[in-house]
Length: 445
Image (tube, rainbow, N blue to C red):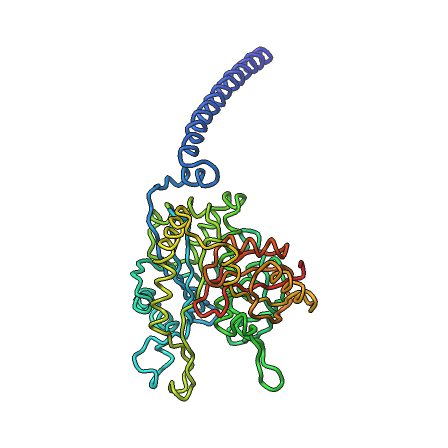
């Protein structure tokens, strides 16, 4: 009897298993069918939104197509000291998805915001506005007054965000301009980097962007960036801008699309902003296509007065007239000039390339470690009809770089590269530069 019941029970279990197996197959087939339909619709939407990485992100984020230029105040905040948040980095960033043009303008952290420099106090420096009340809108108001721009948005980024972002994307390859050695026990800040191209993790990235000058020697003297690079804060701001360009370029690599969730998590934890996500998400797909060669970078023009004229407080006084000119060039004249250049080309009114070569002023700096390379490069350029007006030496570097200082035509920059046979073209325009192009000869020359 028991054997009969057991046999019957086994038959029922076998039947249930068969039914379950058939049901499982049906569910699996249904899921495959749904995925195929959804995949087809998704693929169509991706193509409809432009295809490629940009189309993929536009589809995922359901972004709009017609967008205007966005201007943002970027504040980099260090949190090493307890209950103190210092503004180490202040920048104005703009991005136009329609023209794929962008701008980074550095504002020195010691920029004076008061009325009377003779009675200056540390609390009137622009970097203290946020640390006093942790109100980014006050800094935003000061920057708008300095620049005359009507910036609406701000992004406050804690040091931890940079560290985590760099680590999430697997590090950032960057050419460290000089040896960096600095220690500040009060901030638990220790900077020790060797010059040269290398992959930086988050910790080293923080060291890079915070370095200003070295530890004092036994005589109390410190060294900073070389004069041709821009010493102290000017050098640091240049390094920050150039590093940001590399972070943008390397974050936008196709393989990092799948790390978007991790990147957004870093932002949520360490970024304070008044930009609504529904606004930000619309720009992300277009930013993926951004070429950093289309970014202009510059620093606020001004001077550092003697301490006996500023109540013994070290401040940076921006030049109002030069600032007005620079803002016009960076944010308003760029597209107008390009349109005029296009129309001029169409009407065959462009200046001949030979004439442009001779009028171009070029500076050649030897960073190869071999003095004969400087002579060789200068002779090559002069032989090709270029006008070399300044020469010198700089920190040893691995790669040759051609730096556009004054909106030099791209065709001429490419011509220089062809003449030298080497060179990465970069843009770092400066209204105060005494040359149109700076060439740094590297070891690869």
